[in-house]
Every structure is written in structure tokens, then in C-alpha cells.
Image 1 (cartoon, rainbow, N blue to C red):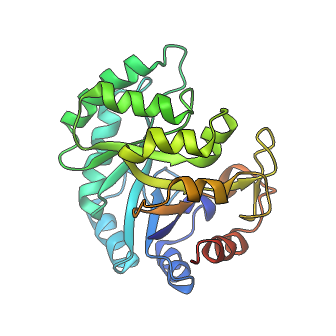
Image 2: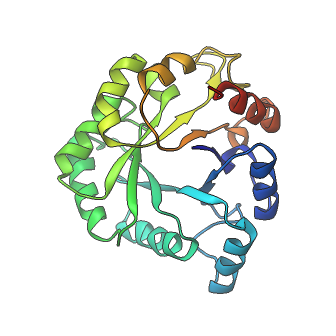
Length: 244
């Protein structure tokens, strides 16, 4: 199942997101949740209903929250759980944390608490922030002892942290809820490029994750880079790259 993150098309109305997905045969969308996006926790009930209508049956792989396990009050997550239920999203993307106290142990402890309020929504911890490696996120998940949790493997982050795709896959595939792909100029120059034209080992990642049947999502970081390659060109290349 292919998807894309709306990080690639910041601020785009949901009806246009739906049209873009259907143009390229995309089945799923990861919805960035932020105050400057069409989807955020401040939406009224009427606005949430309108968002569901605008998506017109397009599947949601996850709500991309900015909740950080080691940094944030759990009430922030609770607001996203409510939003996920209203939009029909099965999962919420969360980050491990970037504060100085971030650690595998603390993230695991906080994840166990977070899972208690998730109310059937899966919590997917991304390889991000100060815990970039697949081995680290797998340890967080295992040590939490929680059910209803999993991983988002951002393949660029594990690679730039020094893990090979095979090493990351060995750690993450048992927990994997979503595979995120992107391309960039280098591990230090993360300017988004058209998939297949940069240096991120996309082919090796796909080979390492062979057998994974869940969502494979293009996360093209248009929002953060003014010189990012055009999103639609990148989406077309991603779809071509994923053809058997």
C-alpha cells in the first residue's frame, strides 16, 4: 500500500490532497497535524466531519503528530487520540524526544503510559530526534511492554545514524507499522530530492523490508526546505520506483 505525507504539500486543502492521491493511484495519506494545516487538534466537530467528507474515502495511515514521549505532557497525545477517532485514523505518529533527558528507558516508560490512553489507536514511534536507530526504537517498544504500539521506520534517519538497511530492518520489521521513504543529497545535506536521484539507499531499504505489506509512505519535506524538489515530480518518481 502506497501513501504520502502531507508534509510534502503543506497547507493543501484536503479535497486537493484527495485528488492528488487519486491522480497517482495512492491509497493512503499520512496527515500532518499542525495549526497551519487543514488537520489539527483545534478543529470543531463540524470541521472534523467536513475533513472526513473531503477525504472521500481516502485511507489514512496515521496522524503525524509532534508529540514527543520524553518531552511533552500526555494531554497533548490525548487530544490527538480524540482527533484520530473523529477522522477514522488507525494510528498516530509520535517522536521519542529531543530534550537532554531523552533515553530508551524514559521513552519506554512514557510509551507504556501513553498506550493506556490510546483507546484503540496504535502509537507508532518514529526513528527520529535523539533516537534515530532502529535498534533504539525497537528497544523502546520492547521495554515498554505495551500493546497497540509499533514503529515508523524513517529510512533516511537510520541510514544517517550509521545503521545499514539490513540492520535497521532486523530490529524494526517485527514492530513495523509504516515504512517512510525520502531521498536527499547526502546524510548531512538533507535537502529533499526526487526519489532515486539522491544518496539515500532506497533500493537496499526495500530489499531489506521485503515481505512487509503495510504502508510505504513518501515523506518529502517540502515544509522544511524552500529548495526541495517539486513534490508532484517526487510523488510520480516514488510511484514509478515502487512498481514491481
